[in-house]
Image (cartoon, rainbow, N blue to C red; front, top):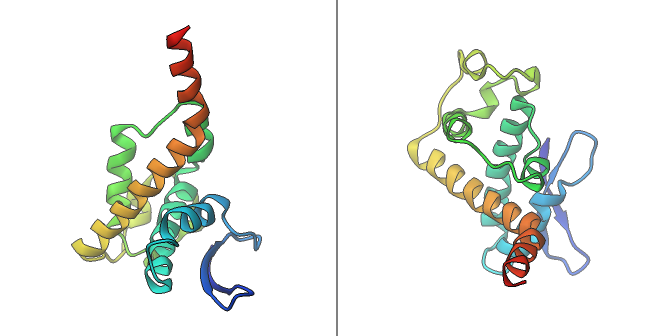
Amino acid sequence: MKTVNAKLSSGERFPLLIDDSGIPDLWVTTYTVVKCRPNHDFNTMRNIVCRLRSFRYFEQISNRNIEAEFSRGIFLSESDCEKLRSFSWVNQSTVNINKGSNDLTKLFSGARYVSAEVCAQRLRDIRKFLVFIAESINKNNVHFYHTYLYI
């Protein structure tokens, strides 16, 4: 998984999160276009995409698919949030992401940590991203529920 700088036909630069097979991450790209592009410059958007890459690493290590879980109405538990918070402190360049182990403590051994500011920025952007996904996926379900209440 890597972040690349795409150059659009208009000359605008746009950051993309590319998975291991070379395909842009749909949700990260959509979030960047809808929520970030209107209000942020390129460097800020690139930083946000890099922080969301951290979340995708967390998903990969935890063997999770947040979008699928949200569409089934399964949201993060308190334990999941604590694991994500712990993972956000770790400098991902010092962790072997491909291990695919649920035991995050084994992955953290020998890892370096980031500053409180970097951790807070990661968590802030991940929270906004998760809210965006949850609202997007469940928009129709919420509409149906409210319609059902009025019937």
